[in-house]
Image (tube, rainbow, N blue to C red):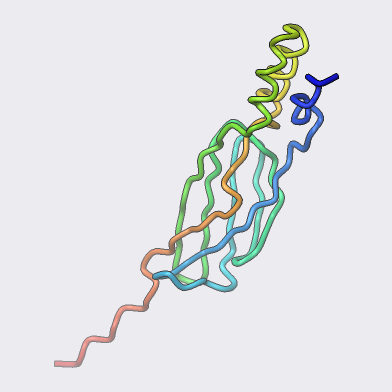
Length: 132
């Protein structure tokens, strides 16, 4: 029974809540529409805001846009602590291998950074040139 703690990600959520913030020269851009894309689907959020995404072993790309300014950033998927618990189950080989295999396939043992910051490019309108 003591070994079953490692199974938590096997039965845990395959979703993750993420905070999305578009920034322009360090300032939060309010109202930017952000598209999040991974191998598991496409989601939308308005900056600053939050969204639930499906976890994946693949990277997550976030593209934000407001009027004429845009920004893109890619976030790596990383292994959670739950995967280490599954590795501990290798003492019971069949259960451990099933847990590791299932969590790896479903993405349950992976996660993205909880806060996603996207720097917008060309934030300021070009200054007007004086007439000659």
